[in-house]
Length: 246
Length: 304
Image (tube, rainbow over all chains, first blue to last red; front, top):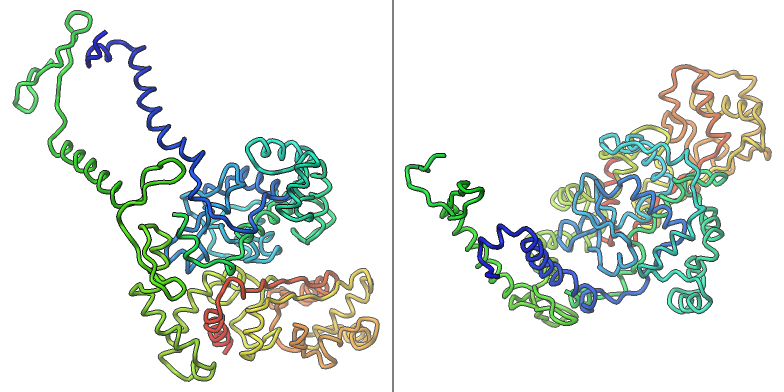
């Protein structure tokens, strides 16, 4: 058959096949290199997967749609550097599935919000932002303090993340590899078999939502917010080092 | 079907469906077509100039370059936003203007900054932005928080942790943990009420004097031990972050906002019963020495 304008236009099956081929070329060029390109992810110490409690907090962050107004991507511009701190590294979100970079900022970027404010502030602010920031237009999230945290399926959630490449451990061998990479304390947190115990222990380790007697969704979300952007110690690195990865 | 379009005869595509259903062949406007060609040309220039195409495990770097200083040596690298940021932070025109002042402030003593109108004007404008980005979430945009009870007001001259330059700098640099134990369980409701009457009497509020006398014994005795931190006079102790109870300034109990005597007692009782847990984070890791210096001068100036 002759591939003329007319024969393609009047033959729906042929047109579908050719359209798929055209789109696939674009897709292949854009997506495939991501699987083998090695020059763009910085080699830095400190980046680790989320603990079970932080991971549940992250699920709540996504459930509540925080990403619709808050990005987690500080760009390498002077004004962002001055306001938020060091620009985000690719390595810092390598265990994020899905990443929360975003491009819409109705509220401020949260890429380095970890330990910027106290736990009490986060709890008051999420419960009713106007309590602490009168000019805020963020909605209230009062149910976070009321809802008990459901952590029954935390091990399954970690298993799902393991499938996409987060190094949570199930076997002794994987656990020992994590001890080597992240140290014994963190490796225990990443052990799927101990997920619930680790979650409960971390919930008690700090006064996340102001009430240790209950484990609420607020506990998990505050624990997650407090770790954002805190994993890499930037005093260890020369700025020029990061520029080598671009 | 009109055979004319803008006064010109229009060609058909030559296709015919169902015998006589034809399609006009209206070419795209010239301006649109040339804009399209221009974007194609732009894309090619972009590929050549900037990092663009993935190749094996790396990518084409482009021919654009950025030059910056690294460890005292000049480094030239292919164009990328990170290198450009380093260059801008080293030699950008706005950065240089700011750097001139920042270096002056960094080298000056606190007295020199306060007494130099030029440096003080810079400090106010720069610290105002730093304050808005970092401090305002708790302390409020102008230094006054949303309401009494959450975080200290910086616009008055009462300082929980000391109002001299050295104390303010230490507060910003290291953060503070404000803590008062909860006395509800230890003392019981009656004694909590008596303490509230005594505490309010210190600032000249009308109280039940019999209860206040009992409260005084608890406050000044071993049972409450309140004087350990608030001192015997009730004027507070900066090293403990203990509030002065004899003035009209309240940072935890909302006494000024209370409607009547009973509400005032309730507000103070709640603090005695539940204690206080307040944390200010340490800023030394987030802000550099000069930024902390600017904020110290600014925060102190708010309180005067």
